[in-house]
Image (tube, rainbow, N blue to C red):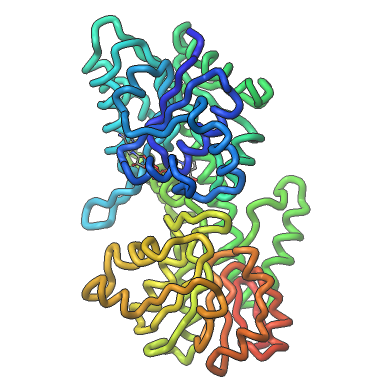
Length: 464
Ligand code: NAD
């Protein structure tokens, strides 16, 4: 079989960009991205795409209606496809009175059931979603149970390593593409089919093939290792603040060691979507009766959580230990720059804690919609009602109006535009004494101190 028709279940941050790049690199393949959400598909078919990614608009506009389609007609797309990506969300579920957390696979299961119910011809089913190890086995069980006579499936694991904000760049020039499949002749043939799609633009030496379980585990392991580096440098940032060392200098010094390398050594308030994947790993280890391994990775999560708590406590302490009735501005709400995604954003933690302590918040983010911010702050609600949160939170269209009259500014996302703001102007319009808490270490702290601000950041003790 030569793949001529691809369907992708899930038009999100992964499904949308990935399939847009495939459509642009493989004009002979028809690519249909489907979603249950009517709104999301309407946005993909509109001028304003549902997600912001540098370079995405151009690709979608060049291919949409030619060989790239966005649709809610899931049945038609599954029936026509030779190869189906499952790229649905895998959020975290809590259980046992909130103590246990694991990947919620209900959407993956739902997607597998849809394929099983609809398919009338052989399919290659590709796990794009990040799933626990051996999820392919559960998917296969569902597919086999509802099998049409004569229809066969091959399941591949092809985890996505893109990072939001650089998704198109990552998809165009990935460090590697990983494809896992069964070690049977049919499994190997399916791997070759998927390889031949990626080979349109990725050199064969960058496409790594493994068995299914190695591929599934590698995605969790990659994210766990990245999170571990961040939690290591974050833990050192606390030591720096207590001793007078500067975490940026420490990061450069250790990053020059070629065994360590400089990447992912940026201490900050947090800001990664790794947590849910490590939780996934922790849960798997527990279910495999490997409690010591689970505890090891749990510590990585705890350290990154501690960083957010520590930073927010510092904000409150610096403001005379009370923020009640104070006006605090959050600059940035996305979990990182160049995305409008707020999932696992440290800004949510900061905002909820400050609201809980009685502060009023002014929030500005260049890409996050007001409705998303209010949704994040009211689910689950910390106040009596969402209405109460709305009374305490104001969303502004720019940084200057958001900081006007504020007691303090907290940098929650490292947007480039925050670096070049006119901080003299901002200082003039703020209540005095004026405070800046740079949770992303992006500002010129000396300059801010010279202007008159009291400044706090991560991993460095500042004179005021
Ligand atoms: P997302 O929430 O942006 O999109 C998922 C979409 O799937 C939603 O629009 C939802 O409506 C749709 N959906 C759910 N069930 C469906 C079904 N049965 N049929 C059709 N559509 C359905 O999620 P995302 O960020 O694109 O992530 C998808 C997967 O990729 C997750 O497992 C995630 O962990 C993984 N991943 C995400 C990133 C990232 O940076 N966002 C990077 C690598 C891997």
